[in-house]
Image (cartoon, rainbow, N blue to C red):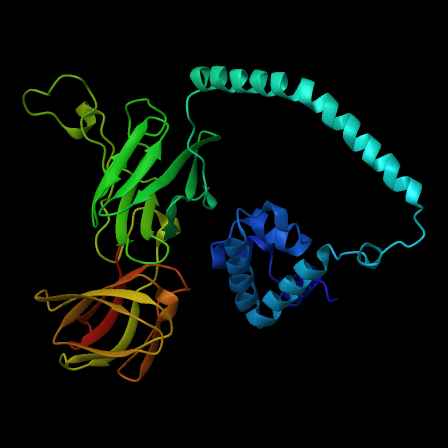
Length: 381
């Protein structure tokens, strides 16, 4: 049978892609990618996750997911075949062997009658003592993600765990319950977030916020409850007065020990690694109506605000189309950027990868040099 791991690794090497690149593009942890290529299937928390990772990885490499999944299922069938000798009756056995077996079973039965009850009683007593001494621990049933970068934003499922790295130490954040709100379990206690709510959280208990958590989307009605959550290390844009006493009189920033820090606005960010380019779609002498023809290639939540007035939110499925119209500007929130394919003034718009959350402002901007207008796609932070 053709090796699954060898097929994946060979295709990845043909494309000159590293495991780190695949991890960034698919949002699959590096250890799971290595496990797929090494066929170490026991490392996965469950077969649904394994099959999902196989599908995502093979699609990313340009392979046919159904063929890879079929190889895996054949592998499972052939992994522990039943020996033919077990299916055939051994006619060479002598009758006396049966009597020997009966004697052994009888001896074990007599010994078990006297030995097993006291042993069971001791085990039960030991379990009662352990239940009193050890507190109940909540088990992690989902997938574990490690947050090494400044931002981690994706769709998570109930039971998933995020390991946030602070000073070379891991602090777990468990998505313990998805209902009308999201409940997170931390080492320091629990935190709840409503849809669209943002909270600053102290992970290490030093009375200082370490991370900013934003609940972008919540789906508690699906077969598997899920959320889109943004974890952001950048908890403050500008440091305020840090002393314990309020300043009196007119004091300069130098007197207060403040450093000048630029506050990000639309289209710009104070962190260089987050920066994305503004795209100019077309140029006109005067603004024209904006018409966005959209085709959805997968499940997606779309929120938009047209001309700062009309606000709507809709879920779309694969194959659906939608026309969005505005006069001067439209602001977009897209839960699955890879599924969002649109056309604007004859130009195709591609805003990101599958599973990536994208926020953009499409707006007519007046240009000073030409005196005309540019239709720009501006990133939001």
